Length: 314
Image (cartoon, rainbow, N blue to C red; front, side, top):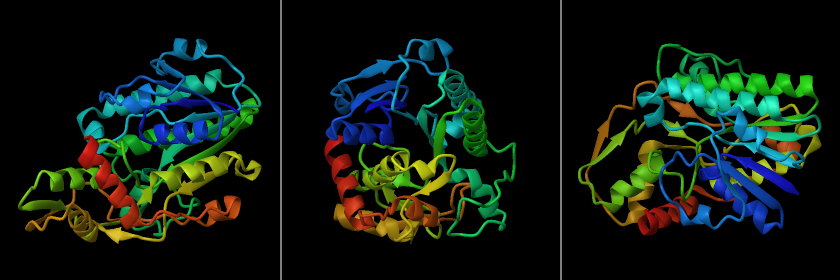
């Protein structure tokens, strides 16, 4: 297959590119490299294009005729959201809208969305956990910078579904739930804990230890994506991607990371960041019914692999 990965030099995109290349597919990665950190693994990819996807000329320069297109390009991360929320909305919206103008009938698109789309409903007590795809989406406070990412992805979901029907291409939307693993940057909970453990932080600050998450190792997320794109019945569907088997609270997660690191600092428990949802866990019934997917990488195995990469490579 000829596969186009938009935002393919990012965390999930790079793992997906390596998976598709290993299977013998022709892969082209398009990215603006705004993450800023040089990664030799990206430089080794055979087909890489540097482009600003908020500029429609970047799409005009791309060849048509792709078997699969993955839209992964977005500004993510709490620090980015809080420091420049307007940029989050501008980049995430423009990059997608220009793609939807460029895409052709018969194309097959995967759009990366997020569990943050329904987090406001969880916090408001109107959305159950584990959470299916059918729950209503809501924003508790439209003025909160933290919600700009969720807003951009809610708009994206609607735009993809309606444009696919109007233009005659097929699309599947994957809502990611706490995907983690090597190369995800330093601004996410597992690598942040790992790096602070490596530095020997003591006392060890721990924010929101009572909150719980269901973490999914990146290899499992990529497997789910590949299966969804190979499943005709997934067209037009919103599908949760994650691991519902090992939900854990942040306190126990920190203990696991510290044990893997071989350190025993004093833990200083602090309040959770403002606006963060207390609990997140997907209901994977739809993903299982469509693809037969089951997560394979347990939390301890995934945390060990992630910790070792950050200790050796960051």
